[in-house]
Length: 322
Ligand code: CP
Image (tube, rainbow, N blue to C red):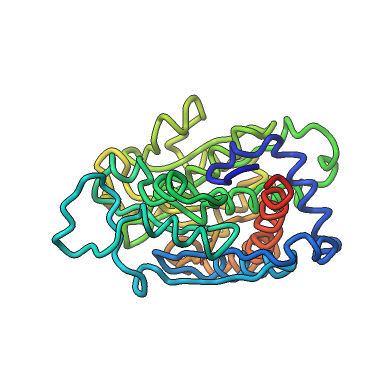
């Protein structure tokens, strides 16, 4: 694997999930692989899980890590070609990416959507310019469009918590629902997009539910079923994956904070004893009721744990093929 920027970069999702589960049994078994290698984690936005789990994953492979909070510590980068740089941006990505490539063997980047300019966000300019100008492998730690490390951790978590009797069999009866939930702030689409792309690779019934107007990018959802009635969508579900996202058509706007879409234990009781999933961080009693999050059916902590093994299997594949 050269870069990991989308879940579709994996040759085989199911095989990778199994490899990650095996790795989890003995996380230090490949400690020799990263010896003498360095990964540089560049954060243009905040993080808890991504930063610590990727650092832990690198450490498990014997790799050194350099972390830079680029957003408030680095020079402001210019991405456009041919610009007269007489304004606020001090350095062009052409130099920055090449310089960073001399200090490390892999670079991982977190750069969220601006939610101001849809076309610019769709171009994923930070990520794509690093791929263009860096001379080392690039990992997406959440771009304006996707969060493939999260999606891989989610796939691992799904595989580990299949309903009794389904593990090891074809999962054609499995039902997974991605439900929008209210949030006071405009949030990006990246987690939802990558979850959709990951689910499109699964042999399961998959339904997205959200209020009208919150349709995700059709180029990503393709022919995935959308059910505007949350109660109907939840019927017979085995997993409820919850996430807020802002409007995609009226780009970046919060067009509804409808509290009726919050995940409650009453709604969960209408499912097939579904497990609750969320990538975190989550706003309690806004997105999801305490009772759901604190119940034995919540997998959010296990999901966060799997971020380490998702990152580790990706790093392992990159080190082995470069
Ligand atoms: N889920 C996730 O990416 O968490 P952080 O934003 O804390 O890294």
